[in-house]
Each structure stands twice: as C-alpha cells, then as structure tokens.
Length: 220
Image 1 (cartoon, rainbow, N blue to C red):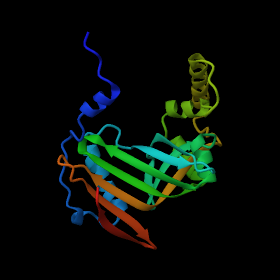
Image 2: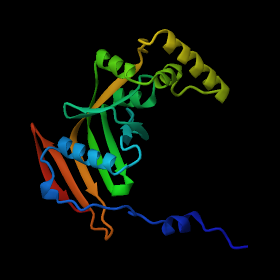
Image 3: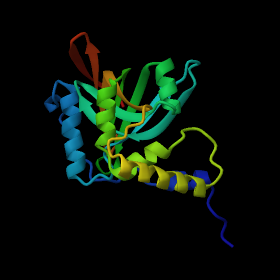
Image 4: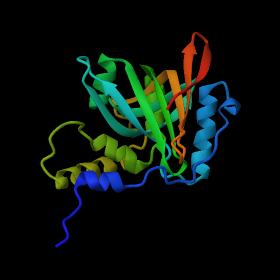
C-alpha cells in the first residue's frame, strides 16, 4: 500500500497564485483608497469571483485576545466599510471593549487581497433597522431565531426555531430585533496587494494623514 502523503507534503505540493493575474500600474491607482477598493471590487465581480463581498473580520477583546471570522460587506459609505451582526455575538462584545478592527478580502482568481484597518463605530438604530428590513425573509428569520454563542442541543431545535421565526416574519414583516447592529470600520490604513506568478508581488499602502491619504509602495 502506498503511504498517504503527510499534511506537510500535501501543503508543499499545492499550487498557489494559479489564477489569471492582472498587471497593475500602482501609479495609475486612485489617490483615494475607497475609490481604489471600489474599482477592484467591480473588477472582482466582473471576473466572476465567488462571493467577493466575503471578508475576514479580525477583532480583539479587552484583554487583547484576537478572534477572526468571515462576514459579508454590507456597504462602503462615508469612507467606511460596513458590516452587520448581533449585539449578543462575540465580535460585538470585542468591538465594544476594543473599538478597532481589521478586514481582509481575498479574491483568489485575480490573486488580489485588500486589507483595511481602523477604528469602528456603531451606526444609529434607524440605519440598523433599515439594513435588517432590506434582508430576505429567510435571512431575517435566521437572525431572529439565532442565539449567538449559546449551546445548541440539536439541529432539530435550530430548524424549529427558524421555522417559528419565519412565521413571525410573515405575520409582521416590519419586525426588527433590538439586537441588530451595523458597525462601520473607519479606515486609517488600506493596502491593495496584487500577486505575481514570479512572486514579485505588488503592495500599495494607503495611510491616513489627517484629512488626506499618503500612498506608498512596500516590499512584499
């Protein structure tokens, strides 16, 4: 019997940067990182990148213990990257205790990453409610049924809770839970990273300086 490769051997044998990697002129990128992000996002959608709005959100609690998870970008408004969550979720507790966050987008078919870091702020209740009501009935039912972080006895319990919540949504389509939140990451640093087959990766870093942005190239 041929021995199965070890995990290390598998990892070493996996290809990287296999997509159709575009060339980027760093000096042609917009001076505003929000505009640059939007241009790259449109390119990701046009290239058929799966779920380009998925991003890794990294937070830290009051003691500095980090946590990361994948969430969906809700909007980019007033120069801030916006996402939603439940006030009972661990990320909300982290952000309330340590109001800074980092985001990472990875668009593999293009070999591109975008990193965003900065302070966070909680949007007002009216904006949170409007966001919740824009969601599909199924998404609203799932949010209403959720009990973030609590032990779940069985999958059947979750299915039953979601079914009951869907009935509530159908009876009252304007129902909004008081725990629904929108958080905005007000970036003070944005990095656009373009992978290269020859490993001459491009890093363009934007850093906020008061009301303006400084832009520079960094070694990969």
